[in-house]
Image (cartoon, rainbow, N blue to C red):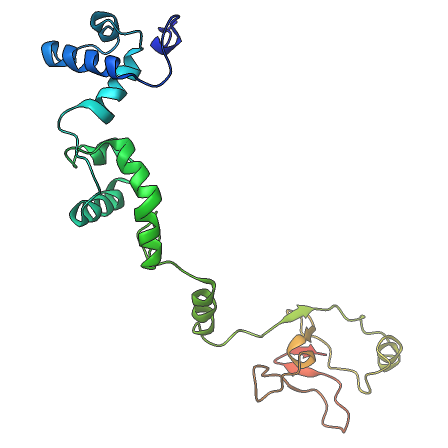
Amino acid sequence: MGRSPCCDQPHTNKGAWTREEDDRLVAYIQAHGEGCWRSLPKAAGLLRCGKSCRLRWMNYLRPDLKRGNFTEEEDELIVKLHALLGNKWSVIAARLPGRTDNEIKNYWNTHIKRKLVGQGLDPQTHRPLVTRKDEISSTDEGGDLDLDLTISLRLPAASANGGANWRATWPEVATPPPPPGPLCAPTICFCYHLGFRSDQACSCRPASSSGHFHGYYTGSLYKI
């Protein structure tokens, strides 16, 4: 089994740090260096866990910490590093002397993300944001739509009385269509029913030259 976290040890303070605790931690590190954080609290006379001492030193007490607002140069560097490294804040902080990983992460979430969105950039991918309007425009520029919407429809098999069978099954069609080819099944042309004609998206031609329109042919296919 592994070691239990030092923060779970009894008689360990977990509240806010006092000025006296800060002074003790600073004095010990100045005299002995950081050393082992797990054993440092006892050596420094602190009722704190090693993790709490490390975070207090790194984020608040070390002398090389930068105070105040981030500069424009720091902003640009953070954006460039985030584009390369993602949310690896400790790695990013190592390239910004005096700034902590927690400080940079908070600054990213509260300031830089909004700044990038305002510039039309995705904070995660650093690419231009794609809006719904852009998607519709891209679809419109994609060329003419393919409206060849057909489905196969198996017609009744031919019998001895031929036309009688057809008229019984399809009474609204005046003339039976030619028998379907061996490799092609009759189809229904939805382009006609959608209101398109041969001079638009539908390239079918009338099946009958009489005054009444009953269907369309496309090659060897009969479309109704």
